[in-house]
Length: 468
Image (cartoon, rainbow, N blue to C red; front, side, top):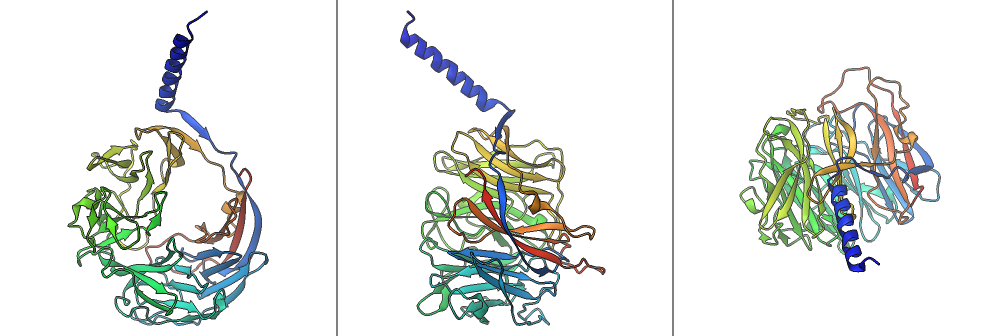
């Protein structure tokens, strides 16, 4: 009879060798195509402007759903429904036209920055902001909870740093409090401002005594919204930009906070606010100006030790655009090149540009591997499978979206499908909602000569996981 201990050792060695080969196999395939979704409901909402893309908003909260968008006449429109209803009740906001850069407006021009967004406070009052690109705050608040038709314009929030606003965003803290943040200033010269809504006084107040980031009139930070991750801390990363020219982005940076007031670098050291470029301890990768990183071209996850791990793009030594990872190792970031593409995306200039390369979702799969989604004008779209050493070892095959989501209805040349995800949740883990419509691509925020496309149809899609 064979020695059982020797037999166990032989099996263990064999298993380890196979596992190591599996980790290093460049052709490994993870097939997730069975995890499809089906369309459970489609609601036709309204006709919308199709001349250029601009962000719309969908917010599901408990048993209600709220939307905000620009209609065929470019008027800002809001709507709501109970999830059991088959249609939205719509309200066109009062038409105020921006005659000068100093005014507020509910009528869309040609600027693709001028998205519209929604938020909801702990008492159910609905908040809206939008149509701002270095403009005074255009902001509305409902006078009745859970009733978007009662929105009324409020001309000031705190009263300072509200004349040159861009990128409005609402978010709820882990405690449910409502925060509103935006950039004060222009591209290349701006600060990040955070306001907290006081539900008792129904007034806004500063969350922080200073801006979170300060470009010191030399640059501005293109940053993510503070996001609660698995460690129950808020995480923020950004790139600095020196001018309106998008090629002047530089220095991928990162901070974290347990409470949105006290901030730390990746090494756990306190960070003094506002954060400026002078604080080198927050820099993940000191990418230079014209070094190949664009606004928020990065994605964050945690490694198996709970340390932050970034994926992003920049130029290699030959000038081609590549994907890289940055991993915390002791008191420094370990930078590693992922791809070896023979393509240079040479982006520059101002206005809304068309992205040729995109960094997708980066996540720890929990099975010893990581995955990174990507989109590339030359190499297509897909999802890389990475091993623990941050090497591409295969691919992840993702399920195809329902055909209805990509179907193009308009006949005007150049139309593209647009979608917007849900800022909230219905609480049903196997259900998600999204908006769909069609527009022409971005045009650097410049007016297009006629003819323009006919208005496209805005839809709400309810999607259900087939294999939850």
